[in-house]
Picture (cartoon, rainbow, N blue to C red):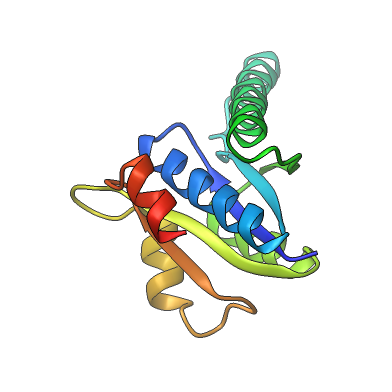
Length: 151
């Protein structure tokens, strides 16, 4: 099955990428793989504090993907694959793309104002020609109607 890999975070534009991927998957008989990233934690001298910070970050990421999964069920009646990974975002996304079977596209959303975001900047710039799948960059300013029309 063709899979659209979507990286989600707490930004408003991530919802645009998720909705676009859901619509494309529904229209093409594919699936959606949601990837939530846990930022790499700075080293904290006290181990218990470090562990608490990491646990809280994981809990936020898991809540985020559960919300995204609910959106997919409501919007397109799709049951997504969910992955939560910790580490530096670019290598984690690249490794996930390479390890996931039948990736139809990596779907990212660009911020509507200012810089597009670090993943968009990296994969559309430095790594643009090295991905093993197409890169879809969804403008974060698109409305639901625009996403429906374009997908």
